[in-house]
Image 1: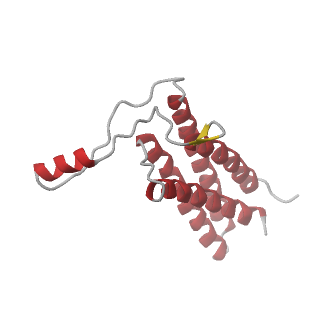
Image 2: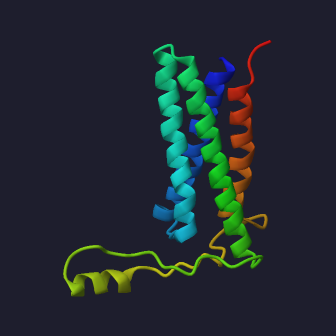
Image 3: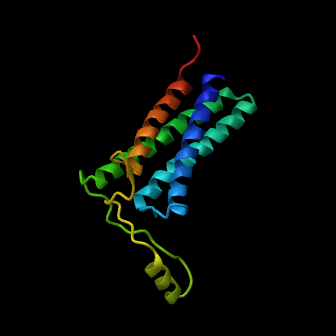
Length: 161
């Protein structure tokens, strides 16, 4: 397997695993995400799209396009790592997090919107919902995404000598 294929695979597997884990915690474990948890998911989705696009480019024998896609996937992993680190800082009271609330609902009668708002769980970004060995989900996302993002960038930018 070439370094470029490995970079694309690493980005895809990392983002799929971390995004899948977050969704499993939400839908199987009942841990509802806060606003910053949602923020961390978007770069994983972007990394998956870039990795898939890079794989298609390789299949069409366009290694230059695939390399750009791999670099973008690696950068997306670093972005989610940065958001995760920020979230950890909020959880640990190192700094303040966002004060804005997410908009719930978006249609229907006033009564329907009110019922949706009242039924929605209030999830605070400054409280750790789950941790293992003292590291929260945001912390694991930051660590894994940082390491794998660096690996993806290294694999996608180094060439054979």
